[in-house]
Length: 288
Image (cartoon, rainbow, N blue to C red; front, side, top):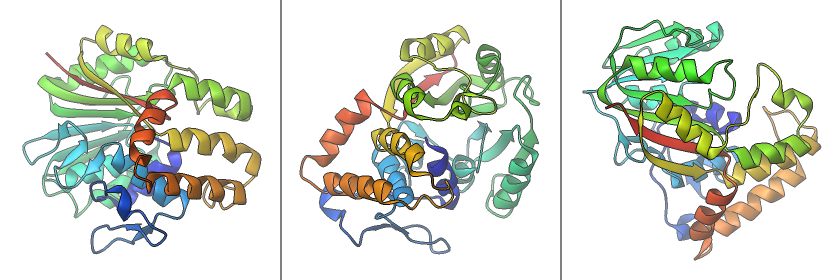
């Protein structure tokens, strides 16, 4: 998931995906009553809509990603929680949430966001995940999204994720897909592949092998985010700030993708393109 999407996801929850004919010039994501309506005519709003179509943050089924349901019976550990979209989604479904990130300001922010929105209770810890400041076997759901490409020792982090899960715990792991990362190698500035940004490219088979080495049973691999793969490849040449990426090139790409999704075969083509050049790869796994 792109950092722009992660930033946008602070206002979760979003509704489940719409039918193609519902995508029009005036379409918007309908959020909770106390959150803004997000138009589908800008890249952030359309990118979030695209993520929901791919299975993220499904309100109707309480799935943080399709196949990973969340309830008040769960203890969710969100490692590398970032802006906290996933943590907040899970908290609002009654789960106890333990949010972890390496950045103290991020943790201060997520504490503020979870306060009053976590009926199941929450904790927030500053940690580099090596080790995690948690006892063995505390989690029923473990989330680690867009983290392993940043850390010095991903195998050690995965061992820690395994350690904190209960037997039968479900895992949601994501990393940038290797093919689009090789695309970014050609167009992105050098800082993209320097600390604290991405320091490794993880191939698909390698990602599965990493999860299995940690002891996890991989149940499914999924891919999403062709929209963002192209968006980021275009972004670098536009010389705009990520907080306000307003540029004709990006706007035209967003409009083209919105128009495609509105066609009869648009979402079917999206699935094919997502599988070929996704922004991110997803592993759904469980602890034996």
